[in-house]
Image: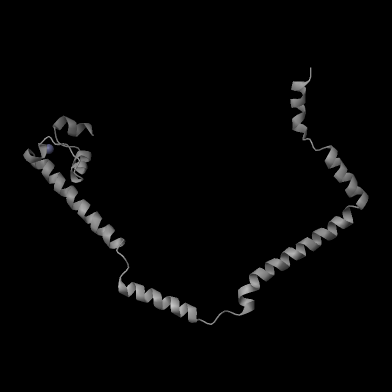
Length: 143
Ligand SMILES: [Zn+2]
């Protein structure tokens, strides 16, 4: 409720909108005030316009629209299927890339790390599984 309307005795915009939806104040001001009646009719016309706009936007699809949609679907179904390579080429290329990457990685790791080094590394990881950030916590429990 804006203060101007409250001072002048006129209904606020909120009150007018509430009246449009049947829950407005029942103080009879609307019957005696031409200004508020004019504002109300303006609000009513805006509401009517919005409702008709919404109705036309949300209008259930007409027969013509549905027929056109059906024709498009049938046309798409009747299109000759793309060739195997056209449909699967991207997936095949990706697979090739992954396989190549894995092969390169495998080659590199075999060159760099001998079996002994690998075993050492794994055993270090096993014994050293505690992250260094835990160490201060142990100090809390030691007496
Ligand atoms: Zn008024």
